[in-house]
Amino acid sequence: MKYLTKRQFALALGVSIRTVERRVNAGHIRLSGRTFGGHWRFTTQELDRCRGIKPGLSPFEKRKRWTETLARLRSPL
Image (cartoon, rainbow, N blue to C red; front, side, top):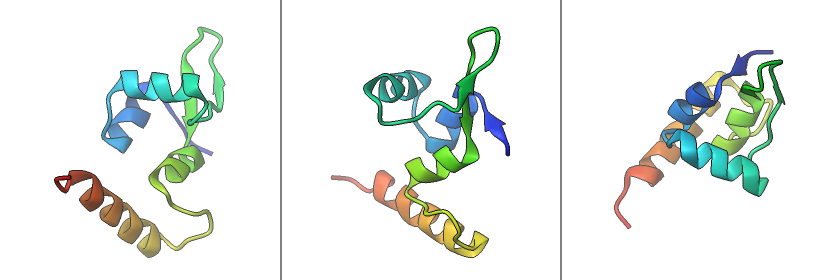
């Protein structure tokens, strides 16, 4: 299982680190744990969940859904 830092997690979602912090504090994003130094860690499964990707999908389906999510986020309101 791969773990991501707060910065890596935010970059992968295309949001700020502060947004990730707010979402964790509000309970929308689950921490996988903390290092002994107190740094936050997230799993790639949590990243997929935040992206709206269901577990067990093929890499092709994951990429397709991620592309659709990005298009939705980039489109004007």
